[in-house]
Image (cartoon, rainbow over all chains, first blue to last red):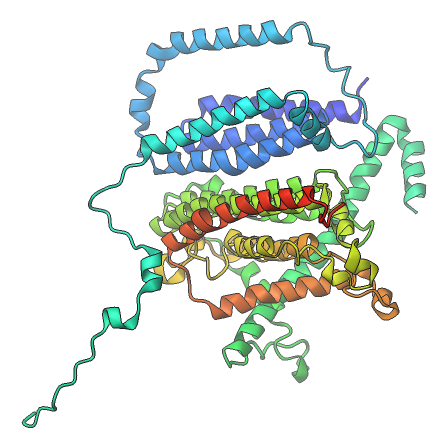
Length: 200
Length: 365
């Protein structure tokens, strides 16, 4: 039976597939990044249809709002030579295909059993049911250790990323704001009493 | 009346499509009912800004354009005149600009600014979409607004515009973090992401039971977060003194330099609507939303939405006052303030409030 939600799902699914295809076929890397943004947005909309509101909005907040902005930032700054980028296409195609097929296989292994078709959408929850609260409860009770482990790994990754790239250039100059605030007139100005020049 | 409409659509279109059509039509009507006053407010906000800054700087401000030649309305028709002027100006495309993205950028700037209003509660039960994750939704949409600026800067094929885009990408992403953390504190004390619940939660407590509602609002116990949120809000909307994105003395007008006519005015609209949005959110999170400051028969008789509007007016005027008062921040100092002052401050405050909530002296039970 065709109902409103099914129509919405197919529209979003079509947009998602189309934009995902354009991510890899777009010639301009900035366009590709923007199509990826569209793909994230549409994926968030499909998650909303599955009533996973926290995940959907977080996807937009984290990936669209922060990660992709930095991504675009970098892509726009790079001096990309399109001719040179397209040179190696046929050479790297077999490797790319192999990785892609392997990924599809792995996902199939995980998901095949649970696939139930479109008919069994999640039930409409009660009005006072909060997705966010439920998720928080699960993370901090049943999955507390896994969650904390993931947090520690992320923390290590953050510190490592900063430590690897932090380099103080010798020729860069910067002000120290606390020094600036502490500066007093006496440090900078010396008033000298001089007799007036008679001949001038 | 809504029930009758629902019944009508169900009887005409069947049980499957009836509710869907009903939802779409009523949502569209409500959206227009929010958008039209919002556009009017935005237009007169530009006039108020020019007038107020004029008075602060001992000038008069716009006082010429009037309706139908009535002299004592001098200046009141200025926004209308500006709007008509912008409508009739040509939109010029720079040479080698990426045309599709050049057109898309102003829309991308405006859309999230408007869409965020869907979850704003204007009065008890007066909200378009009373969703559970309202706060999260607002944060997600305000974080998307940066795309308009970045794409405009890149698509314009101009160095000034591109520099503006780079600055905005760095600045807006940085201040979003501090803003998000400040909101996490609000979320902790209200225990809900729903904006209506957040407002209702502020109307309870010792002071509220004595009738002094305004002392129960979040601004008092969360004063440092209010400060962080408000300043980050100014930075997030690229207003002075954090307007290095436009920086007219350094990079002409940043991302907007190549835009003219309506395309330019969409950016303008987005900036002012975002300013109204941040002011509204400040009022909802910290100043008790639609609640009257003191519960007395006279104050309670005022419709709640008027309280909300009055508070928004005060906060927005603060934005303008700050613009008229402070010189522009230097770029590296903006980044320093965001990363080295605000983010550590908010992180510490999350722990402080979290610990406070576990003690017997917790205000939020």
